[in-house]
Image 1 (cartoon, rainbow, N blue to C red):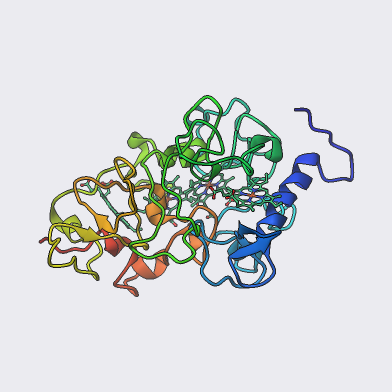
Image 2 (cartoon, rainbow, N blue to C red):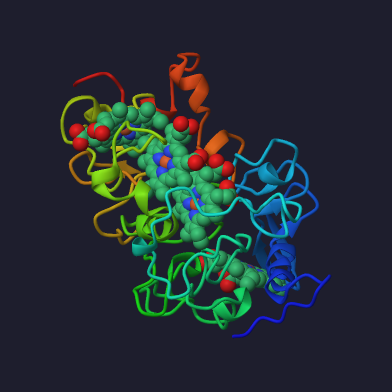
Length: 310
Ligand code: HEC
Ligand code: HEC
Ligand code: HEC
Ligand code: HEC
């Protein structure tokens, strides 16, 4: 689709992206709003949200916290401020999109410069066309509607699978949450390929690159995953799922599980990051600086790196 750029006017894709943002925003603290009798998942509250959804909340990039707390999406942070160019670690070869990421344009919700829908289409609305009113189950990745949270990447490849919590994790617990497959990493890798490829992982600069897509070993400290919560006496061999460091499943279970099984479950980008934005730098689930300086001895990295061998 051709884009018409009229001097002095925002380009078409920008106007359309604002429509996604507006419908998925709220001026009060609730993260699910009702519009025409339909529940809308809210990803951007203009005041501090209560119970942010699973992706976090763009409140934290829109406010005066700097732009390091998540994805700077067009229509949420002021024009200009969100143009940070190429995604960190972008590797064209890991991006299946024909168009590719255009660093001269801002990040949008959907389309070639976005995460949702078909990234072979520039226009955010066309990219997720039909998904909203379609029957979206089962989640088989064949269409955008039937991909986990409309995460399809491109029409040629299978969309992300997963189990969608019906409240988008507004009221989540170890027994009630989304279930992720390892392939959700590929979605992130399409714009951050260098964070994903095995040979680039390690402690080397410029960024901390943690092994991703690896199985939680069935040995040593990992056997004690989520040390704060002991497994019930009738299931001594499992660990309890932590919302502070979610893991992916080899295969998506039939129903949500509160178990984590070292030797099976997998580290993903979302074990440490939220997809949208959150209260901490680098869109992390916790305060990394406090953690490495030893101010915080619990949670975060220590959910997996328990330092204790059983
Ligand atoms: C369509 C491309 C695209 C996809 C897909 C994408 N990102 Fe990003 N990401 C960006 C861009 C552009 C930036 C840099 C500007 C910004 O912060 O918004 C960025 C920045 C980031 C940052 C740094 C944020 C900061 O401000 O320090 C993290 C962390 C991140 N992405 C993680 C992820 C994860 C995890 C996924 C998968 C769930 C993902 N990204 C998927 C484009 C993308
Ligand atoms: C008129 C309001 C409206 C607009 C505009 C809108 N949405 Fe939505 N969106 C909704 C509602 C309502 C739902 C929840 C219903 C559902 O899950 O089908 C939803 C659900 C979603 C979901 C979650 C799907 C899931 O599996 O739970 C995503 C992702 C999404 N929208 C993305 C977008 C993007 C990207 C755009 C812009 C291209 C957009 N929306 C524009 C109302 C809107
Ligand atoms: C075990 C935790 C962990 C996992 C898993 C992880 N990251 Fe990170 N990531 C971090 C930390 C910690 C930082 C901040 C590093 C720093 O500030 O030095 C970071 C930073 C980033 C940044 C920001 C770089 C910048 O320029 O600011 C991006 C982008 C990113 N990660 C993407 C990813 C992607 C994509 C994946 C999955 C392929 C992933 N991360 C998996 C912990 C993790
Ligand atoms: C979801 C679980 C999980 C979380 C959270 C986690 N790690 Fe890891 N970490 C692992 C696994 C699994 C390995 C790989 C172990 C193996 O293969 O032997 C690993 C390996 C490492 C390594 C060895 C690096 C290498 O290249 O092999 C370092 C260092 C590390 N983690 C640091 C961190 C830090 C710092 C954090 C917090 C920012 C963190 N981890 C959070 C699971 C996790």
